[in-house]
Image (cartoon, rainbow over all chains, first blue to last red; front, side, top):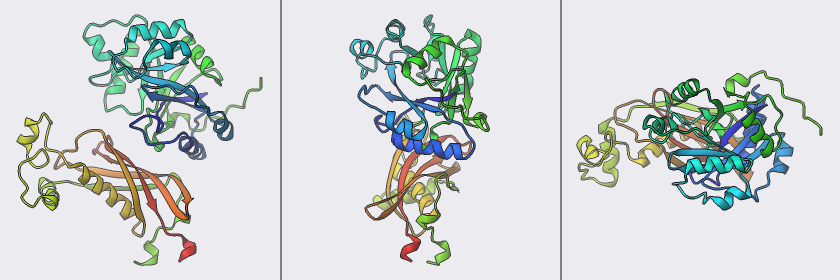
Length: 224
Length: 148
């Protein structure tokens, strides 16, 4: 299953795409032979627990899950499986969130927080590691980011290689045509945020670029 | 305008590409552009390297509206009979003088809204290596074949 793990809709202040438009675009990508099975909305510094995408998800045949991208003292973190504990415990709008506490509390409450675009200049995990900060909680990072500048994904790849992390892929789409540019290939079929978190803790996934999904057969929908 | 140059709403498909157009914004072109709103163009971050550096910028940069005018040129070249209704841009990094920029776009949506044939496009102004410096979303109103 191929999931774009990092998308921003108009709910994020710097994005210009609606969720409907993303799903419409996925049908365009599919018509060209590419495969996108799901997307995760990771809005900047917020989580809308009321947002319900089940209807458009069913209509489009694209799994739509919710997460968040938080600003911490050591860069941006993607949070999957956001729950009431986390939204009560943390002020998502705080740009100085403690990343260590975030990772611990996420794990303890059935969620997961992973560093986004770790190779990014100035705000990526690599910079903080180079400064001597250690992140023993980190087991997974975003390895392929569709919004990265030249060299940033390569830097992330070196980090993953050196530390034996798992790597995800996400487009970091802010505009319609960027969705699906990078994705994560999971061996599991994922329908819910809880299943996504389990899959991320389990490992065995790989980051891929859209082009690598070409001609991959669409999975039959699983019946419960 | 010759009818064969008109791009009609019915003929546009999602995923259709705009451009590329290539421009080289010379320092002289930037000075001319700035002189439109201020005939006495002085030294500024837009026209003078030293002033830009003094302000902490890596180099003199193109004014935002000049970047936008390039993107509008991309749109009007693609659809000469179209009407650019909206251009919403995000400036990701400063655009330097005297280096080629590549203008590209892609049609992402089309709808008839209140009787208007709206086409939405993602557009970007890129460095030669394809890295986006300015990205945007545009809405263009196109004529219909039915109203010929």
